Every structure is written in C-alpha cells, then in structure tokens.
Image 1: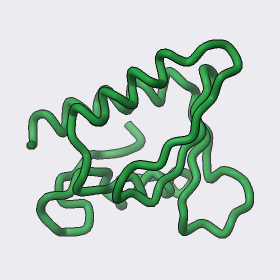
Image 2 (image 1 turned 135 degrees about the vertical axis):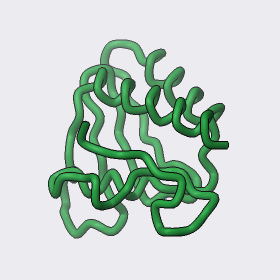
Image 3 (image 1 turned 90 degrees about the horizontal axis):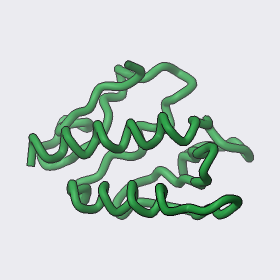
Length: 113
C-alpha cells in the first residue's frame, strides 16, 4: 500500500487523512487530502459522482478544508496540491485505483468517527 490512513495526520485529533511519512515522494500531494470535514457520506458522494461520469465527462473537485484539488474523468484522476509550484499535476492515478482509495478511506472514516 502506498499510504496509511490517520485520524491525527497533523498530530491533532478530529482530522481524517493520510500519514505524511507513509507516502512515497511522488505521491506527497495526497497528504493535502487531510481535513476535519470528511465524513463517510461525503466520501460516498464523491464515489457516486465519479462513477456516474459518462464517456469524456470530467469534473473538478476540491474538498472542504482540504488543499488537494482533483480533476476526475473515467480513465484517470489528476491530483494537484495547492502548495505545489508545479504547473502540471503532482501525480496521476488510474480511475479504478482512485475509487479503491476512496472506498478504503470511507471505511477508515466510518470505523473512526
């Protein structure tokens, strides 16, 4: 696994996200998904919207309280950290990997709310 979920990613209670030290250098932008506003319901809405995309449709997503911006289409998901100096995406995941990440994240949030 390329990440480990945490309910204290900044050492503070009440946040859900990914442990910084668990990420490979090329995926560090994923740390910016950390937020105190994540709920299982919000994650499920993101899953549902992503799965409902048709053909060439895409949408942009920035979670409340998060510094991670994503462009999602049926093939790939482009991740951008608002702190990055890069003009292009920080990394890209295949769509199926993104959905699996969200399912795993939703389960973690559900178990730790």
